[in-house]
Amino acid sequence: MGFRKKNKSPPVLSHEFVIQNHADMVSCLAMIILLGLMFEVTAKFAIMFITVQYNVTQILDETEYSDEKSEPVNLYQYGPKDVATVFFYLLIAVILHALIQEYILDKMNRRLHLSKTKHSKFNESGQLAAFYLFSFTWGCSILTAEDFATNPTFLWEGYPHTHMVFQVKFFYICQFAYWLHALPELYFQKVRKEDIPRQLYYIFLYVVHITGAYVLNLHRLGLVLLVPHYLVELLFHASRLFYFSDENKQKGFTLWALLFVMARLLTLTLSVLTFGFGLPRTENQGFSLAEGNFNVLTIRMTCLAAICLTQAWMMWKFINFQLKKWREHSQNQASKKKMVSPKSKPHKREPARGGSANGVVKSEDKTSPRARKAKAS
Image (cartoon, rainbow, N blue to C red):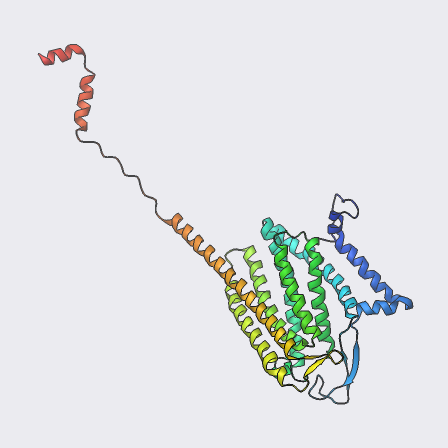
């Protein structure tokens, strides 16, 4: 929506003006923050927005992130200054959103000639597919580098996990930035009123679950659960993009349905193992804000209940979606059968018996009265 040249410029600071030029405004704000690095007085405030905060240098054991005992490693914690970092990368997310919309999605929309309803869904799927692809690739690289997936006990061993490597913390910062930027995009993209509640639901769920994993020092479990979930969502939105381009391309939805159920089972399994089996058996039990320890029964059960309820809600939506698709498919098949069925051919009407006699009578009726008298005599 930004970076677009319009022939008619709306009034300054009007709604239409802000919507058309929001990317340019956000770019100027981001540039002001970057220019703050040039001056010594403002540099310390600008760094708080741009760089990741709360770094701690430690010498880790062999079982931690590094194999060498003597080499120091920079780790990170979380704190209030992360809000400033999230705000800056929220601005970057708005700019990238406008670039993808302007130079990729709008050009594809012009070729496809979609309706207004499909146009909004196409834009939504295009933006989310790009984000899910980026996050899934990044998450897989972190899991591969840090050996998160090879050892399941790594999810709860050594809890509380108060320290994070740079990639993990920056990953969570970008997750917060993206999902929070989706809120003003509802206004910038002129999302339809009937679509706003649905989008607010999943934005709220993402923010709550990611915040819980980040604040409660469960970032390992959160990362492991996000990666397969993002893969499933990527497949769904990619399949929807192909469907909008050609309605016959629906095979991707079948694979998505299979992976969706598997992802829900994987999420429930890892959550039950972590909160019901792993954390209750760790050495550090208790509640301490200073140490970042939240390993108590109440918090564990609350987290597990939140995850289970979310998975149940997602399965309910999934079942309703599949039933709707099945009904539409059955209706289409029924309508096709009615169109293909042979039409009844009209039968030719047989001439009534005695038709020739009627003809004779008619011919006799046409004779003159004198001829009739002569025949009668």
